[in-house]
Image 1: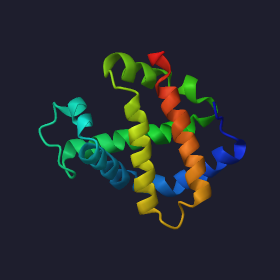
Image 2 (image 1 turned 135 degrees about the horizontal axis):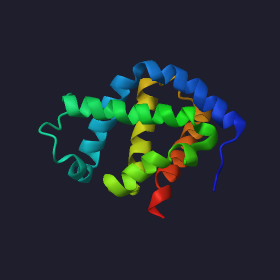
Image 3 (image 1 turned 180 degrees about the vertical axis):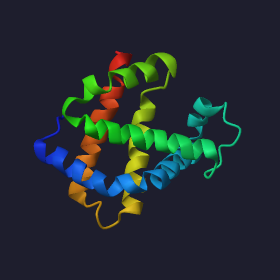
Length: 144
């Protein structure tokens, strides 16, 4: 299992400072892309009346997702313990297939690369990828 080095954590935190003010737009784009590129994920949102990219539910869930990423960055030093409640929610209540964590992680990185073409350097990409992998593993903790 890959762990995050102090440099990885520092890089993620510094980049997040640039991302945070744009979370609403980034989150909406992430969820919209997920629903389009991975239509099987729509099953989790069957209760939404409108799945279009600019719909209120897509925007709201985008903020939820990016808020969760921000929360995880705040708990980066103790991620599995810090995300225990969120892991339980996804495993026992929402029953989200943990494979979807990898899907959304990849989409987040695509949107970050598009939104920050200069700042999302290879070094930032590697650190953020490691962080999102660690986040996905932490969320999947209660599935074991």
